[in-house]
Image 1 (cartoon, rainbow, N blue to C red):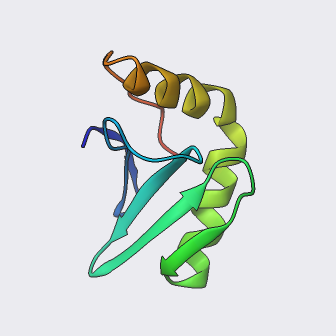
Image 2: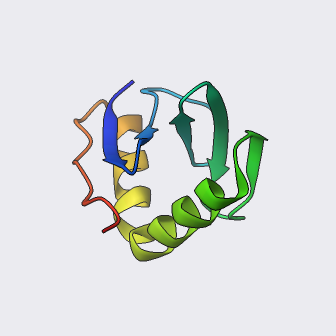
Image 3: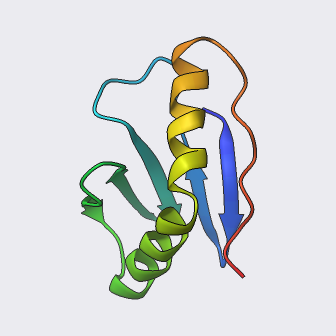
Length: 85
């Protein structure tokens, strides 16, 4: 599960050969959630302020996230994406 970004204690990962729809996984302390790239919906448990930061970051990097999803589907390496600053 490649780590594609990390900021404010939030770790963003994508699994190789993961199921559709395109999404990424969020870890923050003991919290775990999944963010759907197309719908912008988070499933799982995550503090509201973290969801807000993740949504802001995802909006800024949507193209790169979709590219990483496709790379992983093609057994290629995902690129690291700049963190939210």
